[in-house]
Image (cartoon, rainbow over all chains, first blue to last red; front, side, top):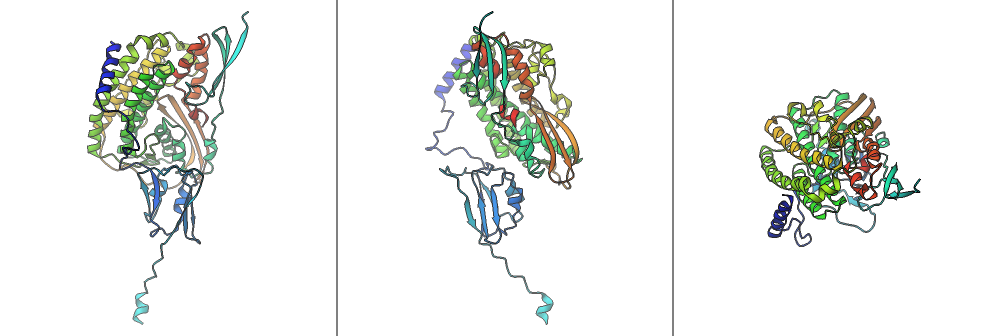
Length: 127
Length: 359
């Protein structure tokens, strides 16, 4: 019985397409929800540091004075915590995995967000 | 008396997916005693609980194990929810059940493959993992992660599954079921598999009970324990049968896991049929103050999380007791009296997950 089952499986495998992907030639399977790596829209970040506090692996460092956002890709566990908690929604999850590296390094992004000037108060304008 | 020799087995051994060290005391080719030692991949997860906020610890709890990750996260969340008296929405509870059963399927398929590999049946190993890939695909489509799902959070779940996707999953199960039927036929009826597993590593019902075997290892020896019967998550609202075998040998453990695959599929179908509409999470405010023992059925057996909070956002203590830890004493009993060549098969038959064990 089991022998015929194996023959059936073998025949099916021979006739069907391979179960694996010929990876570099064919792109890897990705879904819309796949957690690949974190990206930032540096023009929206307000340097609040929420992502840094909520990061379970301490991969993020936000420097308010120097206006930089740093990520250690090898520390990041891609849990989506920072993306979920970002108050201005400037962090995104890309579906592609981060590229392989040969040494440990920290990726630094300079924040270009400029705080809009406070709108002048109406009564002052009236005076 | 025959001269005794000691043969080290592990921590690096072709059959072991993870490092465990066993000193096998042999008389000729017969194993008379085994001295286990663990501690090669201890990562200090339980201590980390004092340094991370309790909401972030979900991600860490989930990374305790690379195979049954979802159930670790869920069990931790259940504990915190019990301490803080959070009522989790019904839909979230059902979604957790669906994902739990998918992870059980993927874990059992992984085990079937590794088990086949342990007695040298490479082809069966590949076939089992090919089917497992379809289960992982569903996981990735619904949660975003293949093995680390990250779908649980305190107060509910992080992602919803749409109605169409649920129907698609239900339909996909039919295809997976057909393939699994073919696979398990080979496991249960093939002569070469039987030769290597029948009457190998026998664990009696009394030993299984007294040495604290859990999960499929205990059920294969006829001990009827299944934590899902306690009705945590949505299991209370679903019908499920516990699969027990009386053999207690490696073959019986293989039968139990093979048949549990079908139980899991049955539970997923029931859960998808009964899933209610509604919100998937509730807002969590405050911090946990109190302690709780929470238990759940992992693919390998009973998992216990002990959580203690003191009203701050950092927990005081977390203790994780994983099924493999309690399955090591029964493993020693199984190995006593076996042949040296059967050791890899017996060690694999308890489905060892060492990174779980050492946390």
